[in-house]
Length: 92
Image (tube, rainbow, N blue to C red):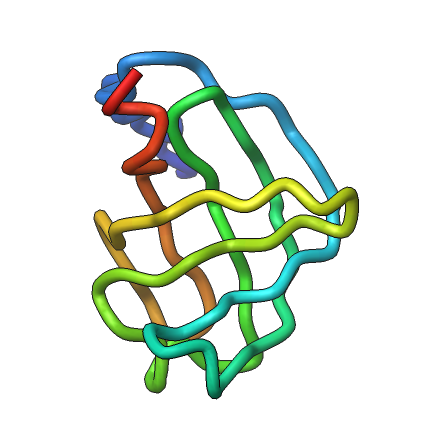
């Protein structure tokens, strides 16, 4: 018999909306960048997918195609995805 899926309690301060936006992670110093996709977003964070998260440091800048840039801190990561918190949103 199939067991019903267990839903985890929502721990985010604000709900995220589904998204499919292109972005680019800019590493400290600005010399390295990695293309990514923003899969969901809120005013204070996002879920981002990469080919691999192995080379992404704990803090970086995330630039959206529309030119918006956020300073980010990684809150969790897997092989291809990570959840980030927008540090600049916390400062306001």
